[in-house]
Structure formats: C-alpha cells, structure tokens
Image 1 (cartoon, rainbow, N blue to C red):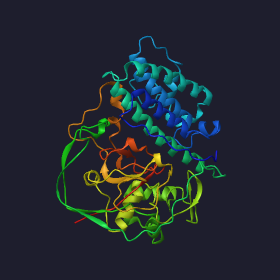
Image 2: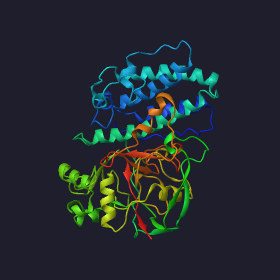
Image 3: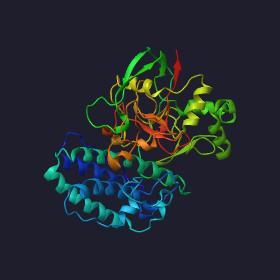
Image 4: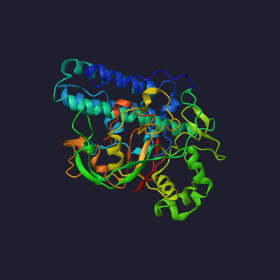
Length: 418
C-alpha cells in the first residue's frame, strides 16, 4: 500500500465530453491504487463508506440517470446493484442501509471493477455519439461533479479506516510538509454593504448554490488565514476543552460523552497525527484540521472572535485569486498557513446554517433529492480542501456537514465584528 503518489490528472471542463468523462473516472480508480481488497471492503463507521462502494455507487449514478434513461434497450449490468448501490434516492427505489455498507462482501472488488468497465464502455459510446446533446449535457456534468465529490469522500473514508488500524498504515508515501513559522494572525477590514452571493450563472453549479441573491453584511474583520495547529494547541493548553462557558450545549455534551480533548487524528501526547501518509509529526504552522463546528466555535469564543458568515466568506473569496492546495497537487494534507489564501487546504466552517436561499427550487424528479432534503441541522463550509479536485470548486460552492462531524477535512478562520 505504501506506494508513491502519481501525478493526479485534472480534466479541464472545456475538453470533449468523452475525454473529460474518461479523465474523471480514471482519477477515481487511481485513488484506489495500492488499496487491498480488504481495505476496499471495510466500513469504519456509519458515516463512512467502503472504497468499493464508492466505485460502484458512482457507476450506478451514470447507469441509472444516463444509460438507463437515454439509451433505448440498455440492459442493466446486474439489477441487484440498484438496491446495493443507491445512496439516498428514495424515488428511485429501496436501498441497502447506509450503516451496513461494509457487509456487502459480494460483489467482489474485481466484479465492481468489471461493472465500472461495462458502464464506461457504454458511456463512451453514448458520449461519442451524443455528448453535446442538450438533454444529456447537464446530466453528464452533474454526474462528473458527483463523482468528484466521491473522490474526496473516498479519501476521507480511507483515512478514517486506516487510522483505526494498529499498524497505522499509509495510503501513499506523501511529501513532507515544508518547515514554516506562523506569524501573529492578522485581520482584513471588510466594509458594510449589500453583497450578492450564490452562483452567477457561468459554468456548472449545484442547485443549492442558486439563486444568486443579495445579502447585507455589517462592517467586520476577516482572518487572513486559517487557524493553525500551534494556535489550537494554545487553546488546549489553557483548558479550552474543559471550560463549559465556551461551548454550545450540544457541543459540551459531546465533549463529555466522547471525552474529546484534542483534534481527531492527534495522538495522546499531542506530538504526532495520523495522515494519509501515515503517522507524522504535527506541524504547528499548518492549519488545524479535522475539527468539528463545535470545536471551531469554542475556539472562536475563547479568542474573542467568531466564525464568519457564509456571505462574509463568499463575498471576500469572490475577489481573491483562485489558488491553493488541492487534490491535483498531490500533497493531500493541509500545508503551513499562507496569508490571504481562501481556497484549498481545508473546508472552512462558517457560522451559517445550511438552509435554502430565497427562491430556491430543487431539480425536478429524483435528482431533486440531491441537496434540498438535507437543508436542516447542518452548517455550511466553504473553500475546498487538499483532497478536493481544483476544477470542482468555486466561491459559491456550499459544502455542508453536521456540527459534530470531524472526519472531513475541515478547519476554520476567524472573523470579528467591527
């Protein structure tokens, strides 16, 4: 498993449909290179899924929403796969329970790969013949972006799985983080005013990014960079996990129940952390990662600050160059903090609940279940991470997780009222 990382291929959005499809699908397969069949079959917790399931589910998506719907006479590879690999599309049919995906020992990994090859062959023929068909193009784009989401999820889930192995195995041999120091956190002054957020109409966006709409933001200050490991270490040293006044009630209950006293993946002596490259020394200058919303919020209170709202974050990010540490670069871990960078490294928790924008309308049919029905009890994250394909991101992108979840590549920056 400890093989060298190959360059991760990107697929420019303006390439031929069949070429882009092949590139996205190949990258998913590349992320599984070096994983054993045993690695790919295990499920480490109910929120995670086996790598084998990710390979099959993304294939099921193309088979169901493109081939079955748009290729007359297409025969399913295996009708049973519709039950095994449907995720949450209730209107499509019944599905295997998510917490039990690790029990799907059959089909085997080779059989799942044969399924991918079968669907890829039919998809290539369809795209070569009708790749620019207006009836197909939006579905293809959604399917490719869906697969890119699962590329990130696959790495999140593999990291969590391997972290539970006493041998602490690496997914790949990864580059070492550069040595660096983090200076005092500086804040950028941001004016009050009306801003527009949401997708502006150019290029792909998920339905939850629409419609674009105005929001009022007060004068405020926004942290130039993400909070670092070293800064979070100080919060811990000063009793941050032991002071109930810093925590939301549900967060404090979790701290007590789960005995949280450090970020996920940090070892007990606070010197090393588990990464996709195995156990590594904690780099204090790197952004603190795998933090729940509750922990980010508690740190913000402790430091006399708060988390930025979605509108504050997005209106600033829209003015910044699109550059950062993404999956394409191959580092696959957050790098030492860089001032004035808002994309990459880690998804950033905001203080905004994941709710529909004014005038939001989900997609019609089964695909309307993609985002809208999850708009409750979750918080918005922005910016992308070191495991996110660069072409998948934009300022308007709305990621969302429950406030207690930590296995995603999540960090945070601070904001302050003026």
